[in-house]
Image (cartoon, rainbow, N blue to C red; front, side):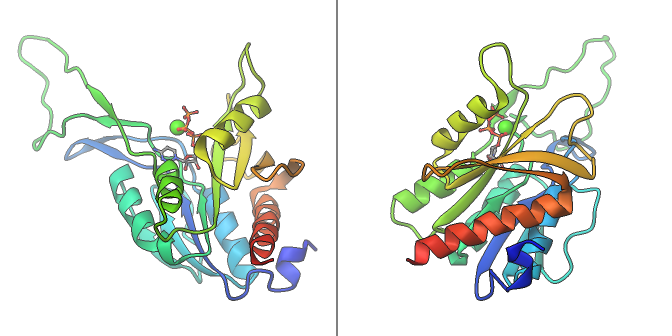
Length: 236
Ligand code: CTP
Ligand code: CA
């Protein structure tokens, strides 16, 4: 069995894991969301608990139950996720951003339900950017504020004519400034809602990438093994 599960590799560590998708309200009954199931984030949290960590699990919309044994914080919007991360991450040893965070949200919220108009005109939804929570955590740390020394991002990529999935992943790792990026290839029926996945973990310290594939719970253990390695390295 992988090292992380055997030996309490995270005992004494506090880990914040975000998971699931955000929902951005348009009006009291409608939102913009995404297809995240939350499975990979839950699997990371469960693997971290099994390795002996104290886990704060910040969950958005998910099709699975939050991990038993974690302190669970439920959120809906990117703003709520942001506020929960900023409240809990400063006390943690590691932050794992597995949540599928909206990049855009409706620029205006309608206090009452949007109705069909009499004249047949259709509403136009104007969008604005959301805060980049991962980037903000890295920047806060760089500014000397308390934030985990180990921050892990996730990156869903499709690749295109100009660059491969891993090239996009490497660029995203540099852009985000985190210690490790878990890259997976998305598209068609890949990954969303599935029980299995294929990822490549990229490291900021120049270590060789580590690939992991299989059940999301196995990949969760592989991610936690690398997380434990990063934390141990920081202690030296
Ligand atoms: N993330 C975040 N806040 C956002 C958007 C993303 O914290 N507003 C985090 C995600 O949780 C993930 C990482 O950033 O850990 C990368 O998310 P991804 O959507 O792949 O990257 P983006 O920078 O949003 O780039 P893209 O344009 O490819 O969507
Ligand atoms: Ca994004």
